[in-house]
Image: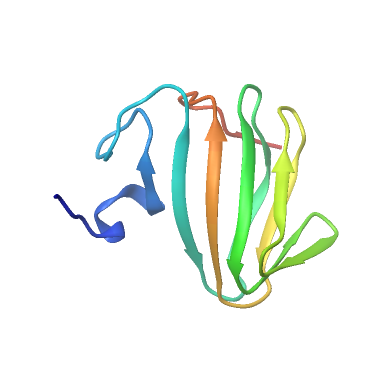
Length: 106
């Protein structure tokens, strides 16, 4: 058995083709993300990857829609999304396929 702490990974990303990673793969990226109330992600899109976000705790606003505990949001390639933490928030994010530098600020 091996164990790590989520804080050892870049912004919560712990599976994917990057360092450090628990499992290196080009198929998927996985992260657990923690945000404080008021944290923002600028309007952006991915050209290759589909992004799946599960809200585990708290409330977020993505574009003009509010999501809360247990909501799952799917953002397909070339769809732009703006993220705002309305409360302290924890999410799980899965992106597939892995594609380095596939985040474009709109």
